[in-house]
Every structure is written in structure tokens, then in C-alpha cells.
Amino acid sequence: MELLERLVTVFAENGYLAVFVALLLCGAGVPLPEDITLVAGGVITGLGYGNVHVMVGIGMAGVLVGDAGMFLLGHHYGARIRQWRFVARVLTPERYAKVQEKFERYGNRMMFIARFLPGMRTAVFITAGSTHRVSFLRFFLLDGAAALISVPFWVYLGYLGADNHEWLEMWIRRGQNGIWLFCGVVFAVVLALWWRHKRRMECEPGPR
Image (tube, rainbow, N blue to C red; front, side, top):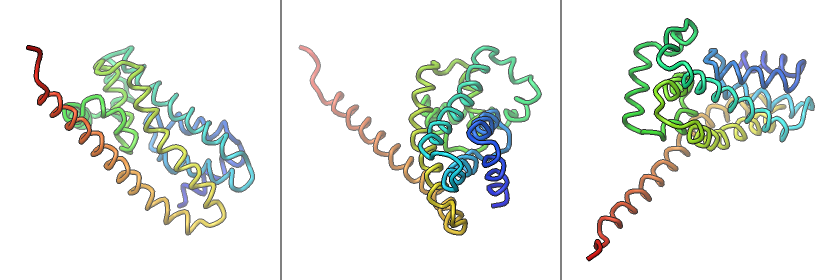
């Protein structure tokens, strides 16, 4: 938890702006875990350096602006963006091929799933923008829906565990697994409803 302690110190000294900038860096592919950054933002509010509800808003803004920036860069520059040095480090040929395979498998739902894929989300958003696979509005809605799950969870977790780092560390590990489980359940339910609707449409008699 050394990284968490460092972030808490920086955020406590510099406030909301530092959290927002750190989340922008997360969105740009800097190797800074987004979940730990959000938890650190929550911790400083639990220590009295801010308001936890405002921090959730700051977290949402930082996450969505960072993600949207990567998507729009890809959308504007297309395939040329893969030649940029910082993008080439994030979007290696192997990772690009993996992202393409995920898109073929999950389609535009990949925008929602990507929020829970550390190390992959930036590559997914750049790829989605550069290949024009999804409109910006659809991307923003899907990414925003996923952020409404992850951002409040991590910020409030940090707030509740501000004075008990052992408890917090335990729930960070549980939370990382729990969010995956929650998303899996949601995905399964949506898939089941889609399949049921499809079967119903196939069974309905056509016009005579």
C-alpha cells in the first residue's frame, strides 16, 4: 500500500485538482492504477481534507474526461495515432490485436467492459476512436454507465477506511474481485434478456 500512502500525501497537500490531474494521467495510459487513485481521493475526505460527495463528482469528471480524450484523439487522427511514441507504448501490436479480438467478440459492449480492464482501457478507447467502431455518444454513455459503478465504489471505500488501512487493504482486494463478479452477473442478465427477446421474436407469426 506504499503507492496509496504516497497518493494520500500528495492529494491531502494539493486537494481536488491533484486527484483530477492524476485521473487524467490514468486515462492517458500512465501506469498509475485508477482504483488506487480513487481510493486515495476517498481517504483524504475521510481524514477531513474534503467532501466525499464532491470527490465522487471530481472522480467521475476526471475519469470521463480522460477516457473521452483518448477516444477523441483516436477518432481525429485515425490509424496515424499508433505511430505516436506514447501511444505505441500503450497500444503495442500484440495489445492492438487483442483489443480487436475483444471487439469482434463483444462488439460495442467492449466500451462498458473496458472500464474494468486495468492496463487495457486506454488501448480500447484509442482503438475504438481510431477505427470508428462506435459513435462518441454511445461510447460516452457506456463508459459513463461503467464509471457510475466503479467511481463511487472506490471513493466511498477510501472514505470508510481512512482510519483503518488494514481493513481498507482487505476490501480493496475484495472489491477488485467483487466488481468483476457484479459485472459478470449484469452481463449474464443482459445476455439472457436479449436471448429471450430474440426467441420470442422468432416464435411470433409473421404477417399473413
